Amino acid sequence: MSQCKNHQHCIDTAISNALLACQEANVRLTPLREQLLKLIWKSHQPLGAYDLIEMLAEVSERCIAPPTVYRTLNFLLNVGLIHRINSLNAFIGCTDPSTRHPSYFLICTECQTATECHNDSLRQQVSHIGTQTGFRIQQQWLEVLGLCQNCQKL
Amino acid sequence: MSQCKNHQHCIDTAISNALLACQEANVRLTPLREQLLKLIWKSHQPLGAYDLIEMLAEVSERCIAPPTVYRTLNFLLNVGLIHRINSLNAFIGCTDPSTRHPSYFLICTECQTATECHNDSLRQQVSHIGTQTGFRIQQQWLEVLGLCQNCQKL
DNA sequence: AACATTTTCGTTATAATATAACACTATTGT
DNA sequence: ACAATAGTGTTATATTATAACGAAAATGTT
Image 1 (cartoon, each protein chain N blue to C red):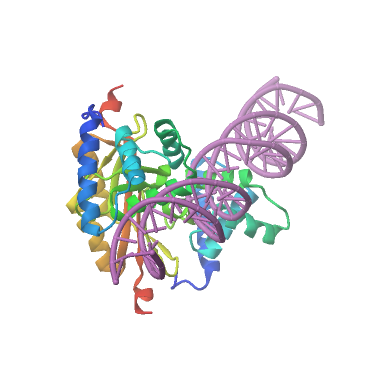
Image 2: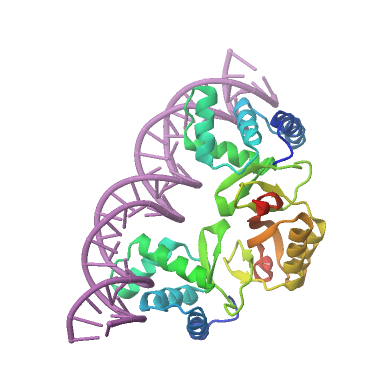
């Protein structure tokens, strides 16, 4: 995101949130999981699993194979610490892991910034559709592609 | 879909819509494209590209390689005759190719039925978010996973 | 009709994404 | 100290998708 140049702050907040969430869920934030989450927040953009594998290799000198990374990503997904952006096959940090919520993103095709969208009216609207049609919602993603305000000017 | 057992009707409507749409867009509905669209409507469920390759092989005795199928799928996507369901890496026929619209689906995890959702309030809500945040929307997907009315009873 | 242009399709090879299966290690609970 | 569980490492492979290039078909022009 354009505002937060100092990603260290993002990382710190994310880890602190993660510690809480893991305690809450009674699961462990192991070194590997923490490291992956840090990398995800350091870039602060949607990252593919193989991007993360490369980044892990650079940081930790050890080569971590796909299954390990996917396992860890799935862990972070399950705890709600990250979201998956299906249209990009990519992963990004969740800005509010304290509450379970659907994954709504505005994704800029120019600068790749993905902004999470916490919008209650939208959530209610979708929920309403579920009620109307008798559909029991388990999971949902909204992915909106386009140009962010900044990139429209260029 | 549970209602339409006679998929022949779905197929006929789809092809008739497709002919119109292609005329409108001044592009060609070649035999291959038509055949693929028919297969998509015959199953009437989300299908992976490789499912379609298998189905083509059964129907036409000739083996059609991935690039050809992906090209054809991309053609159908561009004309708006099918949608892509990102969370499933799958493709499904569009129920209303006459107007360009976002791709909203309710997808049953039990029976795999994907119901396209033409909901103006939802569309407006998303559009509103775009306006509010100065985001120029180019494309959007909503994918809602859960249990359809029928499968909840089982 | 003959030709050039464009579009569509075929083909080989390969890239990118993801998982199965099994062994080993670390942690936790008793 | 031991058994049980959770987490990680490793090899191999499955699944999804595209690059690059050439052949064939359709279209437009003289």
